Length: 394
Image 1 (cartoon, one colour):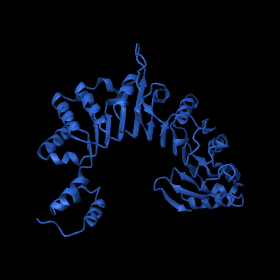
Image 2: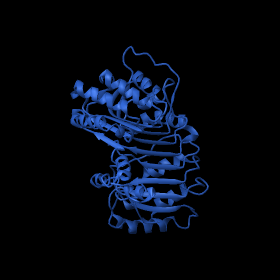
Image 3: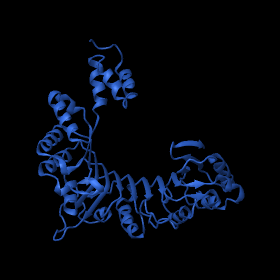
Image 4: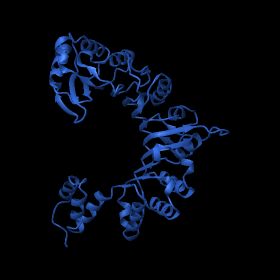
């Protein structure tokens, strides 16, 4: 069929609105030649493989239609490495070497969430991964559920000159017996870093031989069992990032209640713009006890720096909205005093993200706003439901 006489921008707009509708995109690919190429670009942009059968299907597709390889920008392998047979390994090797990826995700699906050792991967697969990391086009890497030695980590990231975004989830790193510290110059400069449920990663990032350079880090997300033992290592990471860090998200997953906040040194991150704290995700508070003590304690420790924060988000579990009517709301006034224009002159917005749906959330917001008024604050106060992130009132 001849090309449909429509502006390219209009076709792109239509397909962009269908990017998550696989069936509709397949139909669009049949309209004409002009629509087929752009539809396929959306269809194959991100590929997620969870079974051996899917690996072989992708390999067959790339063999029959080689141009598809140029359309795949993100690929995710979520496979149990213990069941990969030789034909599948050859298929994965050939597939990875035929792609020029922007994002690579590797997850080990193992029973009982046991970690697979990256060093235990078959050599052909390790070499294929190294080949992908060696391309300047690869800017994002996600690793999940792996055990990696310090030497393996060092070698892995020495081969990723284009890497900018790194996500490490359920990763453990420890120095093996008899294993010497790796040597070599840092070659990977990370701009976005996500660390979730780690074991030894913070210590590795603080080592002088670490092959990840944090001097240009702009965004840091930590979802972990943050406690006094780890705060020292997190402080070192913040110090290494220094003035480049603009966004920081901390989510604590300890079962032990958080009472006194986190004891972190913010003095080194002088250009921080956005701070998001979720230090008690499993705790719930009466509205009369909000904001909780961990919020006030953490804010007290931050003064007198960093003064550049523009947006502060606090995730809090609130119950019993009507208790606001039986209290003087002194904690809200205390928070407002801590966030004064003198201590935080750049602050523009304070947002309370309520973890659970609350029937009377507008009531809470009204009463909290009344408590804050008259204290000379210049920032906007908002309350949102985390489930929808819908601003109930600004």
